Length: 247
Image (tube, rainbow, N blue to C red; front, side):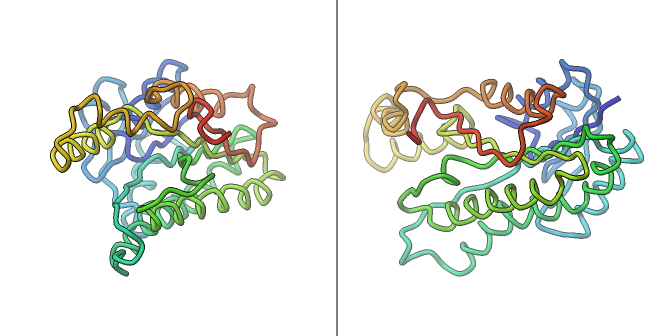
C-alpha cells in the first residue's frame, strides 16, 4: 500500500489533501505542531506531533511514521506560515521564522523522506505546497515571498537530482484560498479599517480573475493527481491553482 506523509494536516489545505489521498486508498501519516488526532481517527491514519524546523523532531516523526505505516511513497510539504510587515520593519527574527517554517522545514522533511522515496520503485513523490508568492511578488510579506521562491528553487533542483531514481518533485502554488488563515486575515482587515466583511473579502479576491477564493479541495485535487501514477512524467513543475492570477 502507498504511504503518504502530509505536514500541517490538521486543517485547511492539508486536511483536504489527506481526505483526497485517503479516498484513493493511501495509508497516511498526518503531522502538525500538535498531532492531528481527530482527522487521523476519521481517516484511519497515524498522527504525530512534529516541529518541522527542528531536525531532531523531524527525524523522530519520520521514524515513528515508518514504524506505524511502513516506508513512505509520498511526502506532501504543506505546513507553512505567513507574517506581514513592511520590508523596513521586518525584523531579523521574523525573517528567520519565515525561512525556517516555509523553506528549512521542507528541506529537512525532504532529506528525511528520500531514502524511502528512492526505494519506491518509480512511484516516489514529493509535492511542495508553495504559493503564488513563489511566482510573483507581494508587498508587505517579503520574508514569506523570499521563502516561497526558495521552496520553488528547491523543488526544481530536487526534481533534477531525483529523476534518475524515479522520484518526481513538484510544487503546487495556490492563490488566496478559503482557509482559516485567510478568514483570519479578512477579520483583521475588518477590525482595523471598519470595512464590511464583504469589502474586506473583495480585497483578497480582486487579484483572481475569477473573482473568488480558491477552495481547499481544488488544491487537493491537484496534489492527488501529482501523487498518482498518471503524473509520472510531470516533474519540476510549479502548478498555479489561482484562477489565472499569475497570467
